[in-house]
Image 1: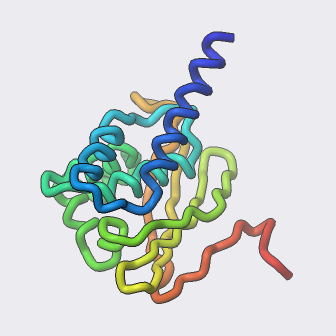
Image 2 (image 1 turned 60 degrees about the vertical axis):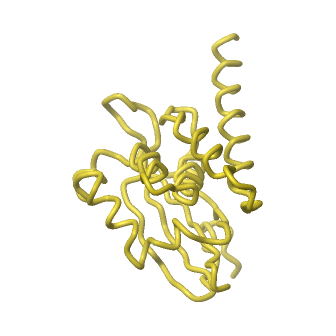
Length: 178
């Protein structure tokens, strides 16, 4: 019983942090530092859903600082397969700062779409509201890890931009209107 409560308390804590961090910035000096400090303490755990993992990554990227500590949090929630493809942390950072992925660093907020889970694979759709007023979409592909330090945890294998300028929110196949 205690272990059950402990696991659910951890999930509740992470969800609370995600909800607080996913709200729009208030412009209060030092707020991003506080948010980033909270995010830096998080590690992948099996209790996190794919959507929660993506939410943590996006909140960390938005709270990124000149030392790229937010990017470091996102990198921590990346799978070994993703790290093999992107290379070093420095290369991962360069990729995120390119045009296609830069909106995840500087934006007016994000909308997480539905998550679709099939076995040990999950897809999460995201819409990012750009500073200029448009939106762009991304698809996050995650897998549940079957070995290593984060066994049982969902980690991001890859991210693909799916559109820009008023990107629609993707619906899970079972909810698409006919």
